Structures are given as structure tokens and as C-alpha cells.
Amino acid sequence: MGYQPTFIPLLTHTHFDKSETIQYLESAEFINDVDVIIITSQRGVEMLDECLQSVDGGIQAKICQKIAYTVGPATYGILQRMGFSNVRGGNQAGNGLKLAYLINEELTSQQYNSERKMIFFTGEIRKDILPKTLKGMNYNLVEKVIYKTAHRDDIVANFNQKWVGGSGSDSDWIVFFSPQGTESIVRHIQLDSRVYRIASIGPTTEEYLLQNGIRPDVVSAKPDAVSLVSSIEDF
Figure 1 (spheres, rainbow, N blue to C red):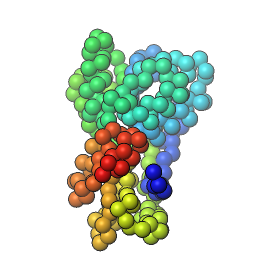
Figure 2: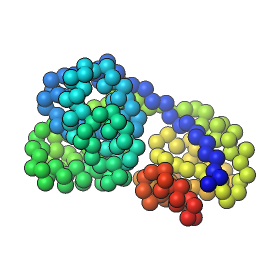
Figure 3: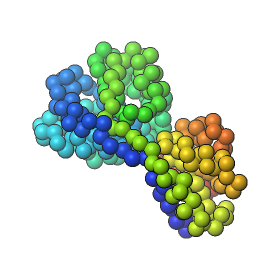
């Protein structure tokens, strides 16, 4: 299509405590008392995958039999490739709130015992709408932090270096894939006199941009790359 995408890294991600996470995955509490895991972040999935590589094969097989709920097609696909046999959500859940309602709808129809623990593997920084909603529905949700995130300090410098090389024409776009880590670049755009075309991957990111005075020209109909590009082309 003629686009030349450039990725500007915003965050660095590391394990919160890898050895402690592995110890928990191998624990009798997790193996025997947890039927459902929830993991909405691709970084979280990647961290979980790294930890599972250090877990005994037999235990790993038991873990991969648990129900795994996630948001979006990317994390859905990674979980499947990791060996999880019952992955749910994905395209049907574009954000945490939709996923919470989907979980409740499916588990209620299956007469799931809500007193059983479900684990939400997450990062230090996360929105609380999913855990708050599920706890409000009386699910025994336990949050387990498995990774931490730090903001890079070279975001604006990298952006200006890359954008200077652009033509500034209608074919140039800034694409936001998540609100996380974008504070400095959002402030930069707010103060910059240049006019940018803005695209958002989905409604959560759109809401964040609107709250910060930036109205996206395009919001992807689905939270995936193909839909995003199609939306830009249609514009």
C-alpha cells in the first residue's frame, strides 16, 4: 500500500519477580484451585511464556488445560501457540469491560462455581475496570502482578528524528496502539503547531486521546492491524 511504518518504542518491560512467578505457577494452590486465568496484555503473555519455559513439562501441560481469557487477536494467538487448549475472548473482546461481560455470560451458562479462584495475570500499571467488574459480579478474582513497566526518556527525541524525514502529507499518520506510555508524546502533539493525522487501534485508546484533547481521524473497527490499515485506506 506504499506505507513505510516506523515504530517508536515507549516502554520497557521486565519481570516483576520471575522466580516468584515460577514458584506460584508450580504451587498446589494454582494447579488445584484455579480453573480460569485472565491475561489481557501481550507483554503479560510474553512474560508468562518465559516463566512457563522453566516449569516442569507435566505441570506445564496441566496449566495449559486451564481456561484462558484474553483481549484481542494477538494475545489470543500467542496463548494458542504456547499450548493453551481452551483460549477464549480474542476478537470477541475488544477491551476489559467487554471481556468481563463475556466471561460472566459464558461461565454463568456453564454453571461455574464463582467461589473458585480465577487469576488475573497483569502488570504493575493496569486499568481496574475488569477486576472491579468481575469482583462486583462476585467472582473470586485474584490479581497476580508478573511484570513491571518503565517509561523511556527518549520518546519525543525519537519521534522528532523520525518525523522530520516525513513529507507531512496526507499519507503521513501517527498511530496509537495503546494509551500506555504515551503521556510525553501526547503532550508534545498538544503543544506542536504541526497538523497530524491520528489513527487509534480501538475505542479504549480513542477515549484516552479524546480526554487529552486529541480527536483521532480514524478509529479501527476491530482491534487488529488489518482493520486499522483498512480504516486508514477508507479515510
